[in-house]
View 1: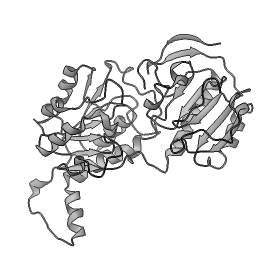
View 2: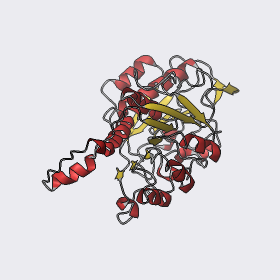
View 3: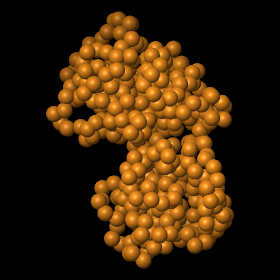
View 4: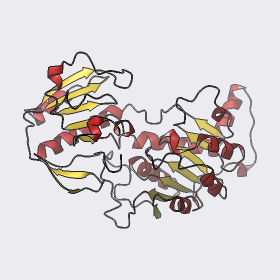
Length: 376
């Protein structure tokens, strides 16, 4: 039915699929804890007359099971699934061809037999977070640079404490941001940073020597990001410690960690890397996954003044226990994994789903497909 032909730019095997313009015989099950926007399902029926659409209001992030209102017989005919971290077995859903995840991260599927033991396409929501997370990155960095946390504390005490020293604030112009993980989020960070006059360095795990290799093939909010990969003034790549060291040694004022959590990225920023950042006292921001940073080493780096400060939307452990020493580290901003929140999230997710339905109907490769080779 399907024959592997080659690998696309994302490193995912491309399969030959026959076109089915009406998606006749296909059944989409939407497991989401919200109602689709008015007219969305009707628009799918108009675009794909043969597609059956079933919606179940179910929060797969909070519930430990699949919804009980979906009978075993119904699962047997599902070919497309929109879901979070809850899945049927491959035996329960034998016709399943496409799983559209609600999240940009895919680490929770990597050991699931539905992923490891089948050729079912799993696609992420990569690209939905770019605008809001880039705002969070720049917001927290500027808050630190402009002493906003201190002024907020003073405000609570009704304390007017004006500084007459212009040198206590460093604006962003001509500062350098190094973005470790130049995906959809990193590219939007680059766009905003560049608009403020910053220099951008990009780091990817694979070399990007040509214009084609630097293009972004994932979902992009129209008009945003860096689809052609032209914003960085310098590119770095590799997975070896010495290659990462070269990047971290490049006089970075701001380091943005935007990599997924994989065996290769777990603990990749620890004491040896913080010691490299000492020279510029780089400000560190993590919006990837908490375990990318060694938490104990981060606390030392902050308290010893090796780095200027840190902004974390993800931590290890997470949730961060009330008595954890990370809360009291010097010059830190912590938020509880909320940088991706946006009232436009669901609309962008459905945009990706619609794109992949069109690609399925045309027999084309899916957008944001997870590579079984790389794990993202």
